[in-house]
Amino acid sequence: MKRFGVFFAVSALLFGMFAGSAMAGQIQVNGSTTVLPIAQAAAEAYMEAHPDVNISISGGGSGNGIKAIIDGTTDIANASRFIKQSEVEAAVKNGSYPVPFAVAVDAIIPVVHPSNPVKDLSIDQLRDIYMGKITNWKEVGGPDKKIAAVTRDTSSGTFEVWEEKVMNKEKIMPAAQVVASNGAMVQSVAGNPAAVGYIGIGYLDKSTKALLVNGIEGTSKNALNGSFPVSRYLYMFTKGWPTGEVMDFMNFILSDAGQKIVAESGFVSLR
Image (cartoon, rainbow, N blue to C red):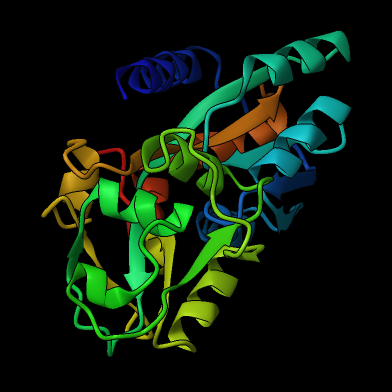
């Protein structure tokens, strides 16, 4: 996680050097459903203070947000993963240079139905469940029920982090149910006593039960210090170095007030 902290530090330094005044206009934000609650809450607060600026926000996944940056059809791309080298090259070829800003820290939490007695799974057990090697909850201390694994679509940054940190690049079994957002994941797991899924920490509520991973709880503290095994930074990428109202909005998100919104949205503030 150190390289991501460098990007945030450099970004924060440059913000102090180049911050400008907001101009009236339209800001388009697209991408990760994980970052969506942060972006929506920040936009509401910002527009209340700046009624001459309109911020439009849509989800669709990290990959779609970054694609919109590449195509030049969005001002800000929300992403729950870092941009790939191939995406940077495509953007530069298209005349746009994506600039990364870390805006929050997140933990991807495995969740089950509240009635499931299982409390803790190791990374290896999670991998075996999603590969189809462990198929019944009784194999990991649960009831005699077939496991219903729920995963995210491949355009999701959450999927890519899960694939890297949990699956270790092993393939998720074709039988796993695929959902398009964190909200859909919560609904699927909450509605099925045999289900297991994974969501950003900001989406935890009483409708699902969070599991420990390798005996470690997915808390804000453990996400920030990196001890929780499935932790990550959340990003906003701008289409080139931001100016005007885009710069002002990004400054707001990284300010004390903006980072308070991050925490109130259920995610982990950078401070």
